[in-house]
Image 1 (cartoon, one colour):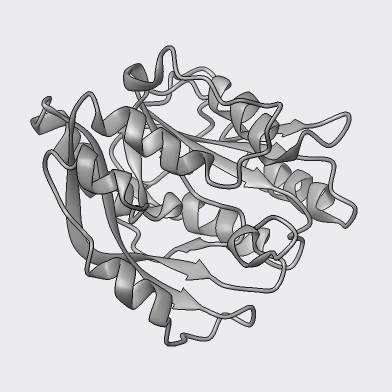
Image 2 (tube, rainbow, N blue to C red):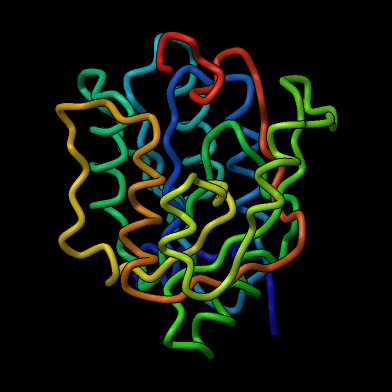
Length: 236
């Protein structure tokens, strides 16, 4: 029977590790964490948060939720700012599950069965390495918004073997994906170059080894805001 994970999992091996990066998103990360905590699954899930020495109260918010959900959240605070690439490398390396799910700290999972459905598919289909879904774009206030950029991306959605199509551009939204951890053994993020698109390289690495499935459902709210990485002129 599916249930919301409320038990202390400190002595259990998680089937799924959720990788969440956090930097200067004190207004958003609480909602992101709750979206993970409310997942209804019949397997243990851990949330691994890479907090990258934020200048705001992001770390304090994370600590509050770690106390609220004992044994289910592992907070990895940084002694100094590592940048996106360094933080991603550190946090992914700390994920213990057979599967890794990604949820950026400013996005929100809205389908409580998201993980259950995606992991069930992967368990039943060993030739597939990852599963991703559609998204609903929201603004910084959480309101649904039209997104011409994603309307174009949506036309590129594909399933199966699509390594070569993925070379033309990234159409997998980071916060919707779940993948097999074993497929990233040997994968290295170049921490000397702070790639804001390191996730594209990750999906290419996985798609070169296995098929990828697409679930046509909006399981995630993708937040576009002025502080977001993909909307940062400095990062671009």
